Image (tube, rainbow, N blue to C red; front, side, top):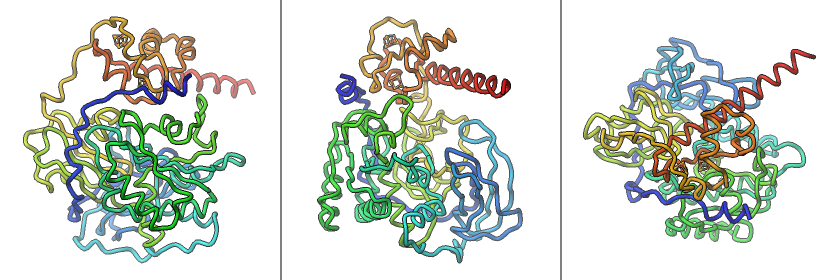
Length: 448
Ligand code: SF4
Ligand code: SF4
């Protein structure tokens, strides 16, 4: 029953895929970049470049001994002018390495194709590439490729759904690099011993699906890789619904894809795998969609990681008016920022700038018990109940309503006629549960 609910729930926001027909523009010249030492889930990197150092593109400038981490590389060549703490896009403090460009974009000597002879070599190379999930989650890819014993994947799911409004970076990636996407999938399957792949893509992108099928046929991998068209509905690309809709497997509450022997990679992630294996160039650039009512010329770009949002926007024609709201990511799951002088991150797939009209936040009113939020929740949750429990700090109810299963897709807030701030409430509820769990652990530790 729950499976069927996952399949048909969600919402249909205005797609606003304004940039889907526009080829990606490669941006090269940036006077300065600011590269954060934490662009991934896990331990932040420690800088291994100092003020005054001359660095080149692809040179490692940050790393960590922790397994759950991913190294950071210089995205332009030039001089390191600062290593300092700044306030990140999420509001926390993060260490950055600032590089002033020498205008040459010299490539570092260490950039060469990795020598790979085994599965261990492959995973090590992926770590060295600095690759993290490019769909927005920023989970280190080498960690995803190292599941616990007994949980090895027997199917690779490629997320090509791109269901968030406005964002077309993955769609353009497919149109422009379908051959490398299939190459990356084949390398991943071969080195990790995964026999099958299914690429999940929404049925409003039939041309991209056709191109992927053509490349699969050309590579001779039609028996092991298939493309599955999925219903166009938000949040089709969320990990748990995607796994169910492509494989029929259901990730248990609190579980991960490897619990059902599935590995999920974003379509851009596998393309970078192919690029890295061929060139040895680590992840130093990012494809992203720039759009929103304040942008003069919406488009897709590829820009060095760490380049400032407004420098990118200036290079593509600037703004029509001063943006009242800047979002990193899509309008449903993205993070609203209180300023625009931050550098783009590895996992950024869009920057949206909205004018005052579109930025206005509607005032919330009391719940009218219409149950629309429950009807659309792809995780079969009761958003209104979780929100009420979070506001009342009722931990028992938060557990009873499976709060931690929420994927923060925003469907409930989107559909709510009372404009209740449901996602904010649910996030607060999750934090209350995490804090309570941490307190319990600390108490147990204290007793030992
Ligand atoms: S409760 Fe969570 S998963 Fe359900 S619709 Fe709201 S944000 Fe999405
Ligand atoms: S959609 Fe809004 S108004 Fe309707 S039940 Fe949910 S919280 Fe209440």
